[in-house]
Image (cartoon, rainbow, N blue to C red; front, top):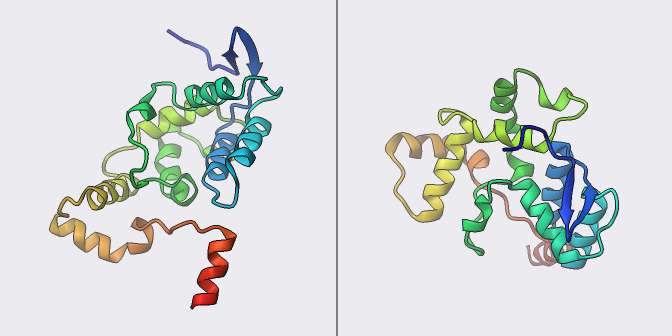
Length: 180
């Protein structure tokens, strides 16, 4: 049982200090979702953003990051290639109010909030919150399940909130602009 909040990760029997604030982790998630960055760019940025000292074993360092941000290992069960139902960047405004309520304080005003504390609050977001409703509708749309009448009505009124906008690289945007 772990009673303290970790600020280190272990890689090949060596210990590395890491940045633990939720804003850093969310910025990493946004960076990893950037279609203009190559995998090499993303790896380099991850190392600069998360680690205070660069670990020599890149693969183990990436795995240590994954274990840190997902301590319960829930991402292991997700299939690659499935449609995304959450965007940390687009959905932050929807999740911040219930997280603040759970924490009893404004998380954005805190000088530092450990990722694990933020994640614990995130996992407690009530099912009747707007954010939870958006995720339920996205999941039903992703899996082809029929929306209930009240869900269809709510969805039609909140298309911009529910539908995630596709992310295009700069090159793709140029092509689209030339085409249109």
